[in-house]
Length: 339
Image (cartoon, rainbow, N blue to C red; front, side):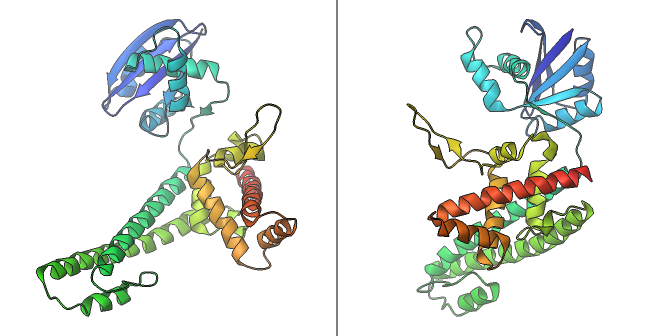
């Protein structure tokens, strides 16, 4: 007998619900998140062929999913939107609570044939961690730079007119006359923000070196694509994972949001820009496309100019180029996986 075990993971506890192929509930268990969570779940699990369905296996359920995989269990990742849809559409026990959530996860895994199978971490997971950390540093620097620009505008007419340069900002602050307690406090806060930016710059420099080393260790040829440096290569590899889980380039484009979404009604077929998909991957592909457009003579710039010459708007030409880049990235990731 095949058993589907749905798990609703939380920080403090995990709730498991086992069902059979007819959706009949076999057992329920709540375990405390701790050192013995795997041992307790394996001792409780009904015998037979088991499939563990973990909601958000890349989020709160990450550690438990990896523990189950290491123990030789088959684990699938159930998106939270899918399990919530099952719960809402259920005609019976549809109340929002942990046992019902776990049962909804199990039913979703039973009825959805193409869920992602969770595998053990590999080098792609390392690149994903490094890429996320680097992007977080970039966001922190932009946030501090914006706050610094706002403070300097309150001290000097026009503020810092160009992109922030630490030495320029220090010179501007040094020239501000400390005429009042308010001005003195603003200058002090601005210096603190400058110190944060210098610290983040040092972290980003070290992060770039670490990412470049890890990308080189992956032996990928993704960096042969114009506009793909070590940073964007780490994002593309890390956030894609195993490219073989996408049957075609179209599936990959839908996943990263470069494929248009059909918007049809009453016999009228139309397509519009997709806001779905992995937005981090979409941003990486966007930056690669923009880099190609900025440099004359590149394959991407030639393709972009051809689209504009064919009466496409520049925005439409950019979207077409992004899809072309997505297909190229997909083919290269597959080639890397085969090697």
